[in-house]
Image 1: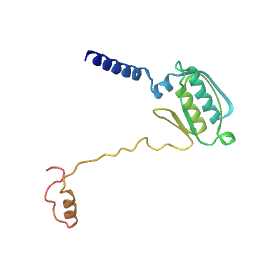
Image 2: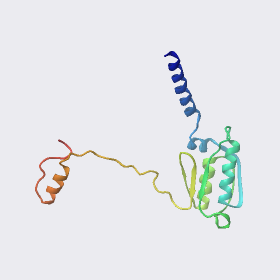
Image 3: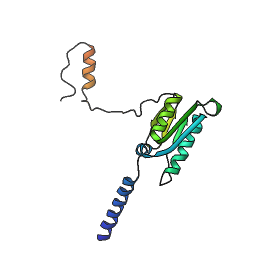
Image 4: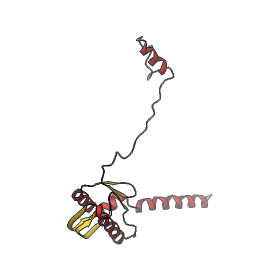
Length: 154
């Protein structure tokens, strides 16, 4: 019994330890400082690829930030000229997207960049309990009879 309690406690602590040591993408994007960002007539697809690789180099864990660009690439990609020093990765992404006329969204696992605006993050579905007599009251409302009782309060 004593061993089971110790093993359970160790597993609980190890789980909370990894959760506490892992930084969210939002924190990592804001805390990662890039010493120099310089692009001369560069396509944004290559600029974001460079920033993603640079974030991996600057990350002590070597994980970096996933930057996913969805838009025209190659010669069709918007071109930028930009020179920044000692700037957070968040600000660099914000400036690049602003100059190129793009949109960005920071998600749980990556930064998404697109040439079209993003839809709202999540759709929330909610269910509300109603009394079984609810449909009878609606039907009686159509006949212009006053409802017998409130369906939300029994």
